[in-house]
Length: 211
Image 1 (cartoon, helix red, strand yellow):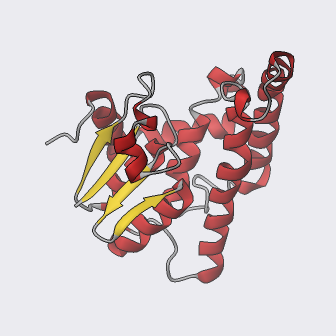
Image 2 (tube, helix red, strand yellow; image 1 turned 180 degrees about the vertical axis):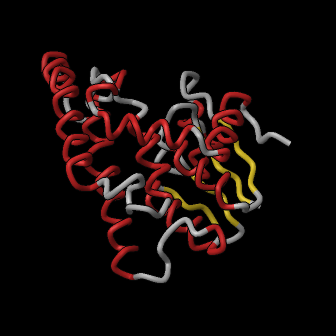
């Protein structure tokens, strides 16, 4: 049994979708970010970074979305959530997920987490003003060549699609209307047709795994 620690509408949703796709046994544990539960001693003992996701496994705790997604795919090879038989294609998947984690997520975080980079209020406001253009630039790059087909890797669905879906859902809040990025909007629609995505969203809303 795996336990995924998450907060609603965060990047942990990608791992949640991957678990729902995988067929692996799991449960979810919601953290109250508004109440600061991510900084509680109990959670810091699980993940000293004080962030989500964190995945509790029989061998220990895993953090960081790209690592968790790769672990889920490798733990459930029959679900075919990654090209495990093709080293180059798997590296492409990892490169895409790393870009989302290291560049796109960071660009988004400047809207609400500016205090991580600057104490000056004016500097934080300046960062916030750049979020929409930075996020648009990132997603135009993704649409122009990184999204290879209906799915990130072309015809083959993978955990990268769960990650893209999750981060793209932040675009309207960042000031980038989805209808200005038709390829991304179409990918969002395809994802929302998948039963596992619907299952994960329902579980997230309920705060528990559905029976």
